[in-house]
Every structure is written in C-alpha cells, then in structure tokens.
Image 1 (tube, chains in turn blue, yellow):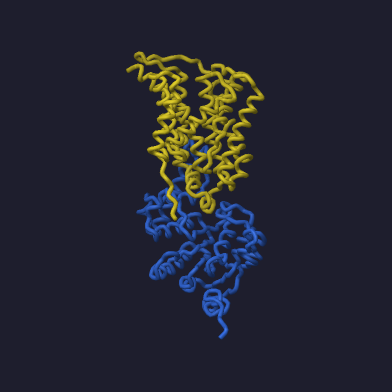
Image 2 (tube, each protein chain N blue to C red):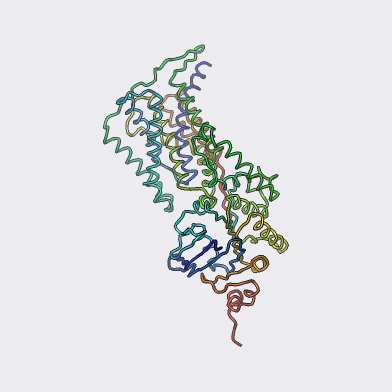
Length: 256
Length: 291
C-alpha cells in the first residue's frame, strides 16, 4: 500500500531550482534513502514534505490526503515526523520536557481544565509524562530525564532528537543525516539502531545521507539527487555502479 | 519603623502594577523577539474600559475586572493578527515601528472619543484597616493580592500546561516547534491574550488607585514597566515580576526620603547603573550563538 506519493514536486528559491520534478511512491514500512552531493536538494525535499516550505508546483499525498499547503503542526498530527541535520533540540529545556512538547498534538484538554485542574488535565498530563518516561527508558535515557538538553554529549543529543520525533507518534519518520559527526564504529551501530526503531515503532523511514556508507548498509532502496533532480533510483547494488551516480560523486570522466 | 512598613506596602502596590504590565512586554518578547511598544496603551485601554463599565453600566468590581481583562486580551489578539503577523518575517525594527504606530493609533482613537481626562467612579468601597499604626486600604489589599494571584496563575500556565510548554519551545526555537506539532499561530495568540489581559487588569487597578485617567497615561507607565522587564531580564517571566517590584520600591523609597521631583531621576539612574553591571538583566542570560 502506498503511504507517501509525490507527484511532479518542483521548488524554486527565487530563480534557483532547488528541486525539480520530484516523483516518489513509498510503500508503508519501506526504508528508503535519499543520497546526493552537498546542495543537491535533499533537505529541501524534507522541508517540503514537513510543510516548512510550500512547493512551487506539484502535489504530495500522505495516506491519500494532500499535504502541500498544510501547516507543519497539522502535518505532524497526520503522522510525519523528522529530525534535523544540525541538531535542533530545545536546548534550555530538560530532556523530559523536550519529549513532552512533542506530545502537544496528541494531548486533549483545554486551558480551562488546566486552570481549574479538573477534567482531563491531570489524567492527560500523567499519561504524557508516563509515555515520555517509557520512551526514554526504551532508549536508556530515562536516567537523563531532568538533564538540560544542552548538557548532553553529542551522541545522546542525536539520540534524543530521534526520541523526540518518535514522541509525536509518527507513521513516517524522516531522518536528516543521522550519521553526521559519527565515527565509523558509531555508524555501524546506527545501522542496527535504525532497523530496530523501524521494527519497534512500525515505521516507514526516509533517510537522507551525505555519505554512502550508512545509506548502502541500511536502505532497501536509494534515490540519488543531483542539482535538484533525481538522477538514479533503485536498490543499493544498482546505485553503487550507476554511471550517473559515480559522475555526480566523483566528477565527470575525463576522456583519455 | 511603621513609616518604613507603610512605604513597603506602597512599594508593593506600585510594584504589582509595574510587574503586571512588565509581564506583557516580556512574554511577547520571549516568543516573538519583538518589543510590543503598544503595550502601555493596552494598559490605558484597560483603564478606559473600567471607566466605561463603571460609569455607564454601574457594574461592580468583579464583572468590571472580567470585562477589562477580556476586552484588552481581545484587543491584543486582534492587534497581533492585523498589525504584527504580516510582519513576522520582516526585520524586527519594522515590527517595532508598527508597534509604536499601533500605540499612537490607540492613544488618538481614545483621544477622539474623549478629549478630556476622565474620573473613574469608585467601584470598591474603600475602607481602611489599621494594624498597630499601619494602615492598609481595601483597595491596596485588592491590588496586591489580585496581582499576586494573577502572577501565580500565569506561572502555573507557563510551567505546568502544554500551552506554557509550547510557549517555551517557541521562545527557544520557533522554526522547530511547529515541526514537533506545536501550532505556532495559536500559541502566539494565546500569549498576546494573556499578556494583554494582564495589562488590562493593571490598567483597571491603576485607575482605581489613581482615578483620573487620560489617553496618554499609558506612555510613561508603559516605559517604566518596559524598563522593569529589561531590568529583570527581558523574556524572563520571573525577571519581569522582580523588575516591577524593584522599580516600584525604588520609586517609593526615593519619594519617601528625597524631594518627590527626584523620583524618576534617581530611579532611572539606578537602573542605568544596574544595566551596566548586568546588561542582560537580573535573570537574563546571554544567548551564545555557535559559530
């Protein structure tokens, strides 16, 4: 069953075409990678899917509903969540509060109930708190709950971003360069980690990678972007030897 | 000694009003990084609403309070939607100029309706309680207690509800908050409603204590509250409260021991000195940008 479908998505920044004619069919439960050199438009695709940018042309359907034109918070509520290339945690808040915020869309009580401390307020707040702790515990981060996010070591901050994204209750998770800044050993662990969260949370995952190593190891299917256009698509084996991909990564072959 | 205690009460009364107004400045700054220079005039509108309901409708205290608060809260939400929202991506200076414009609009709109200063009728019977030489009026009690209740409620909202958490998230990173499911426009409206509502309450309490009101009354009081917010650390809620009480105390102390014309001069000099040593205010933290 198709979960995400993009049709002829094109996006301009002024005169610059950042994404051109992007098409995608993503099955529920798939693990797909988008790779490409710097500035190829990978993050722009994520920004369009999550509603940060409104695509100049084209449509995107998520579970059959058009999402272009919806605000980011509505899109999150529909079940798409993401992480960021450069870590974007709420630095001044505790680890727990970072996770609690992500429950906003799913919490049901109104300000009056909160002020009078009646009705759903207490039960909802308790549910959110418990759920946050459960999530953190699942990632061995519950002992860090009251730590200020800024004070976490780098690897934990990356991990917390993923937990925060999961806390919004997504069915589609977008990971933007999860391996950035990691050493080869950590990258190997990340491969298992990504497979594990897909299984545990029943997710469809799209992964952006700048370096091939992780993308090749973990993704079932890869899409290669260069200058905003899809130049190749297929299983990692095919991509690895695709002439256009080699050209994009290594430069044009010089005729001898 | 009694004299000092008496002055402390006066300081609490004045400080409460500054603190209530300062909260409006600091909340808007925290969430939008802009100074809503029309906020002092929101305060003035609160005083006029109180005048209107007390004079023409003869409403008692509680309904008058609710109307002033809700009226100014609504005004704040409308002003944000109409005047500030279109400028959200614009340079901050443009938004600040717009705020000044909104302030001048409100002053002159009120002026057009009522060119003369108005006298607010008493809506609370003013009895005084005497405690061993220390006199406390019922009005003074209401101002102090009500302000503290309001601030406690605000503190609870900001610290313990999802809306408050969303406010803090937006104030930290307004681009990421929506991507975590926080409806930014909605939260900004709530912030304006809360901040302006407190300004409206302050306007009403002020007009009960100093019952002659005019359209320009919000300017100087607004400035002082703004300075209170800066002294406490703008963007910081506890800071705004503390700043309000500091400014109130300094003003009352100066008026008590020096010629009363020295009041603003000494108060502002002290604040200038404080800012030299703590440029981010008492609770403010410099936001370091990673390079």
